[in-house]
Each structure stands twice: as structure tokens, then as C-alpha cells.
Length: 256
Image 1 (spheres, rainbow, N blue to C red):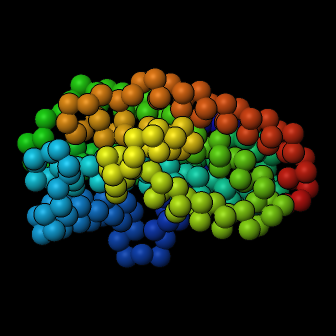
Image 2: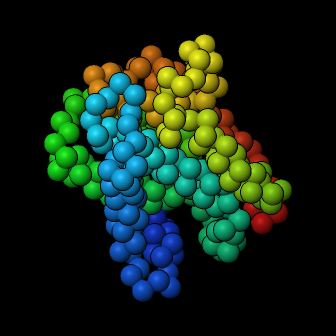
Image 3: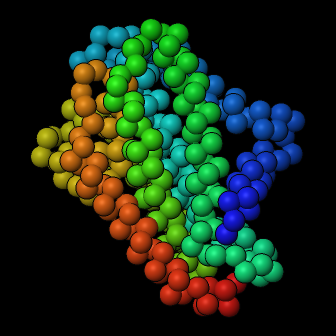
């Protein structure tokens, strides 16, 4: 599939998301602004929520946003990719598009939304006087790992969804449960150390999220050993999902 066609699909994905609204694509900027306002003003000032071990009044707000922004990109990519073959069956019946590469437009659309939110977040950090850490340089790599993981899982679910339409609803529920098993709202210190180590093994988004936190908060560094393990896992899942789609591609097209 050509890059121009993928970009066209990604652009249409963003247009369709806000189709019919008076403000249109402006919502792509308003959503992250509202989220930043809630986390910084409501949690940081009105509720006075504090991050354990951090004296900064905005520490917990930064913690929430640093985990929430990438999680939204990950979960939206996974849930949207899970139904992409069914959603695009009209196009697939007319044009011989590559099934494994089709969900890439969702990754592009969610990456653009993430960049918009991240830009606002960095600007707010600048206003709050939060220093930028050198570990921010690894952010593109960590984001790539999580999106490859989301794409791999989404591809697998997309095939299942063709034959069993309940798959998309299952993925939606799974991501909701997954969210609460990931240290986004809660901090790792509230969980026994042994239990958190197990959680870090079975939940690849745990080390990814703690890596984002390490980029913005305190003096900690991302756990590069765990990130390397998650990277291997993400690319392995993507590779297996690719083979799964290619093996069943004819059946998928026939069933659609």
C-alpha cells in the first residue's frame, strides 16, 4: 500500500472522528487542552493531589498526564485496529489492498493525536518551570514499541473479528481492565514489590508507562532492560500476527 494512500486513510480517520460537529478538527486540539486543565488545575490545585516522594504541587498531575497520553494512543490504536477489516470491507471488496498494512493508517492517526497532546503537555511543563530531562530523547523509541505492540494485537483481533463480531467488544473490555492494571492513576509503591515484578512481566504496558514517568518526573531512569524485553515481545507479536493475517487472508476476504 502506497504511503499516500495510507496518509489519505489516516486523514479521513481524523475527519470522520469529528464529522458533523461544529468545530470539526478543532476538537483534536480541544480534547488534550481540557484533559490538561483537569489534571493540572483540578488535581493539582483544587484537589491538591500529591505524588508520594515528590514535593512539587503539580507532581501527580504530571504523573497522570505522562501516563495517560501514551495510553490513549495505545488503547485507541488497539480498539480501532480490532475492527478495521469489517469497517473497511466496502473498500476491501473493490480494491486489492494489503490486509496486514491496512491498520497502519490508524497508527498514523493516533500518532498525530499523540503529538498534538504531547506538544501541549511540553508547553505546560515549560510554563510550570518543570525541567526537561535528557531521557526525553528515548520517547520516540518507547512510543514506537507501544504502537508496534498495539498494531500486532490489533491485527490478530481484526482477523478474529471478521469471524466472531464479539471480538471488538471483548477488546474494549480488555483495554478497560488493562488500564487499571497499568500504573497510570496509581503508583507502583502501593503494590507489594514482588507482586509488581510479576505485573511487570505479564503486563508489557507497565514498564512502558513507568518509562514515560521516568522521562518527566524525579531522578529515575527508564528500565532499559525491561524495555528491551517489551520491544522483543512487541515485534514478535507483530510478526506472528502478520503471518496469521497472511495465512487467513483469502478466508478473510471471502467471509467479508
